[in-house]
Length: 227
Image 1 (cartoon, helix red, strand yellow):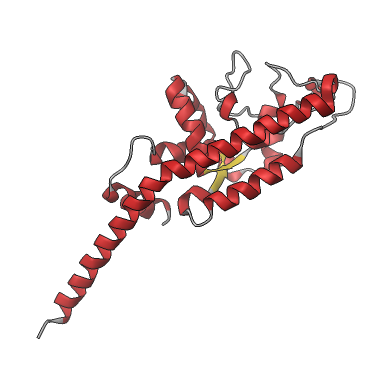
Image 2 (cartoon, one colour):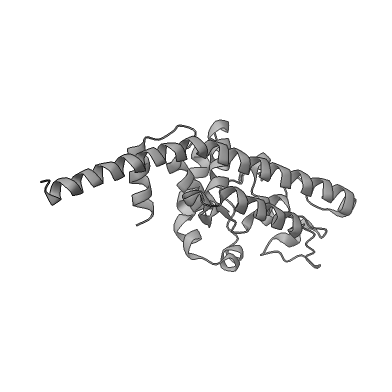
């Protein structure tokens, strides 16, 4: 007759093997899922750019180096963060972004979007010298669908310029993207988490999907981040 301890041990071993197999399958599919999210991001960006040209034309005042809107606190999910992180890593700009993200982490995680905007803190991905996005080609959809027809200086929360701020974004494109994103990420666990951009990028660095992780690393990672 088998002891209760032996039965429980066998059940634990079977569970551990099954769980590790599930993790390996998850990792194999992870890159494909992130790639699908990237396609959706690029599609939304292209739609917004085309809509801007056809609907707004010369009334659109957005231009390279115009970065006042980059003081907004953007929330993205881990899948989007992985895409941006990978771009920054490949371009060699991640360490600079990482330093700023780390300095903003605590405040970004505890501030409301309005409070953050009023503090006028620039996005960590923004190059402080050129005033251009270091990940423009894979920027969050919240950014790619945002346009204005007023003087760009009025986007600055500390602006003293005369005039009225006039937003001319395309929220319907963003809503369509979010619906697509929901379908792609349904049941994908950690990839669905939405975080302030600085925190999301630091979280993405831990995942390091392009390098691959062992089952043991994933198990430890999930345990640490969800407790």
